[in-house]
Length: 402
Image (cartoon, rainbow, N blue to C red; front, top):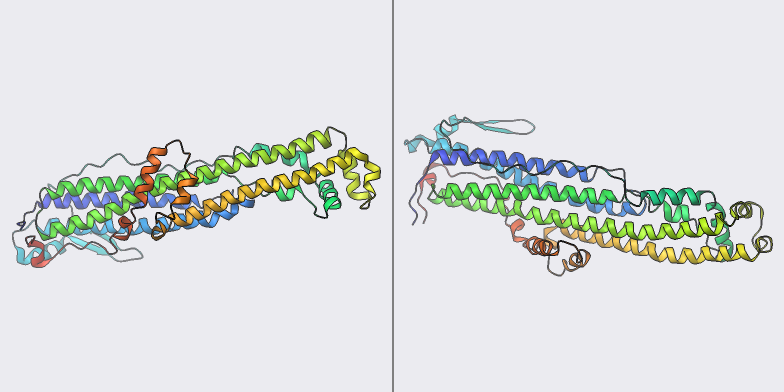
């Protein structure tokens, strides 16, 4: 049996720490909407927007619950400090109530009078929650260059490829525009998720340190209930760290893979249009074909060279379509991984296999492997407190631990 013992100054100080940590949890949550506020999602990139929005929204919901748990912990521990500050156990609850207030409104505000001589619990330096800057994608300049090269002959290419194989192909509409999203916005969203997760993890570390300190001066049933609540709250906050870092790696890898393939696609288009049409002097002839000739009659007018270029464009279409299918597969894989990550119940070993494959070649493989193991421990989230902390009152506040 653990006999009751308490240091009211320490308990009050722990409550103040919890309030300060609630502010930090709120700041971590407040960064997340920036991951969804972007006008860079165009073309194929739009397919990832719902997954990113869903990940951000679900993370915000969890962090709001953690923030509220910390706020209740702060309020009730500070109030408990006043309860234990008196020897009059019969009136201890009413004395504590005299020092506490709840201001009702759109959001209830809780306050407790400061206690002279209350302990101070040191906090670590705040985590970096500075918003990442919007940057242009590496492939953006290639897109702009290709758009400039193609725009003058796109209509002719569309017409001629349609005559050759009854399936018009427009590099401008079917390739350049679908690739024109700002792919680095994926990396920016990932950095936001990582920063929010790191900040949440830091809150957990501070909470653990505070609970360990209080544990040395507070014994009894109420102390054990506090340690249980604080421990489950800390584990749930800690879980957000590896989750955010994994999301960052997935989005960074996705951006890099897509921009790499997109660059190959655009360079191939550039090569054919610039070297085989523009430099050969066929730009004007191609444009004329698109507006003056009838299907079947153009071959005689343009001759073998133009026909070969037209055939080359058809072959290029097939090759590029295969590369575009690769990009679509990368996007679909990333969407599936994000959908799995933002629902803890889906984080089974089997569902984590695609995630491991996607980031298998990451430079920081060891730390990534550790994060994968930690994020698979979904019990941290499933056992998170679902209600506010309430310190025992009446005789329960003074009970020994059995």
